[in-house]
Length: 54
Image (cartoon, rainbow, N blue to C red; front, side):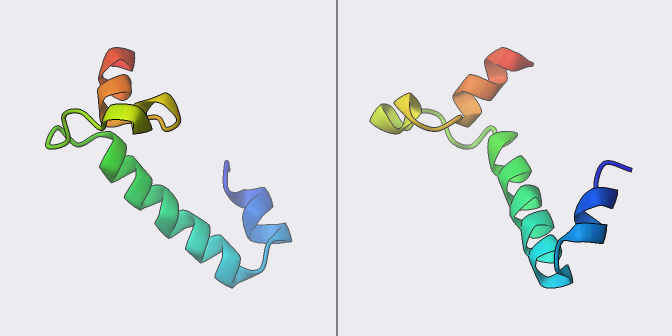
């Protein structure tokens, strides 16, 4: 149900690209392999920040 508006109002190629990007992002944000990204942590939500969430 969450993706229904996207599937209806967004072109299929954009919908598929967004969905694939989201899957890659979820994999990256939940990984335990990456420890510290230095100054990038000031800008991006990193796995280190996400561990605090969980």
